[in-house]
Every structure is written in structure tokens, then in C-alpha cells.
Image (cartoon, rainbow, N blue to C red; front, side):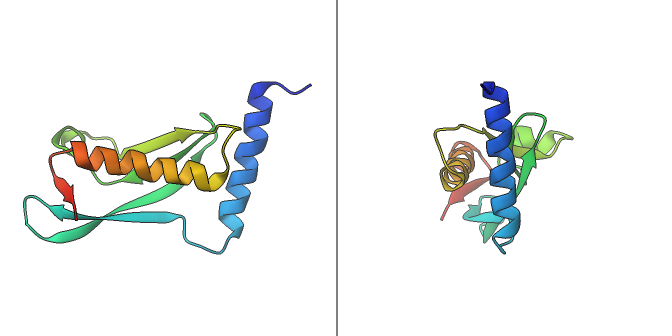
Length: 110
């Protein structure tokens, strides 16, 4: 029998390979209105795999003043779950980012 961690690691490796071999750039963007400049722009999110935490992360620009003031790179993360496929994990990541934009104070969705 395999442990839960071993099963997650195998799925993590499978998802990473799927994304690396699909021929697409691992990014997504969400169109927003910048509340400071009043101009439309995109929040660009770079998808990365965090092997230490067995998760998929999306690094992005700050969407609220707390993140803006931080020295750390803003990111959203979803832990690998054996019940879901890669597309479902990526959709969850987009939903998390969208929710943070909605609840932030630097942008609003277009």
C-alpha cells in the first residue's frame, strides 16, 4: 500500500509533466481595472509547482495594500487533491485569485 503522501507526490509529478508537455505557457491573466490609474490592465499569474508542499502556486502582483507593502512575492496556492484533475486544480487557482482581487483594494474586475 502507498501512503497518502506518496499518492499525492505521484499525482503532483503527473500534473507537472502534463503542464510541461502540453505546449502552452503556464500562466493565466485576469483583466482588471486599476483603481489608482483608472486604466484596464491584467493581473498576470505564473503557475509553478511547489514540491515541498505538494501544491500548485500562482505568483502574481499584489492585489491589496498589505501585499503591496510586503517584501514577499504575492501568490495563491492550491494543495494537490487526489479527487481532482489538473484542470480542476487550475480552475480553483483562478477562483482563489479572482476572489482575492474582489476582496482587495487595488483593482476591480472588468
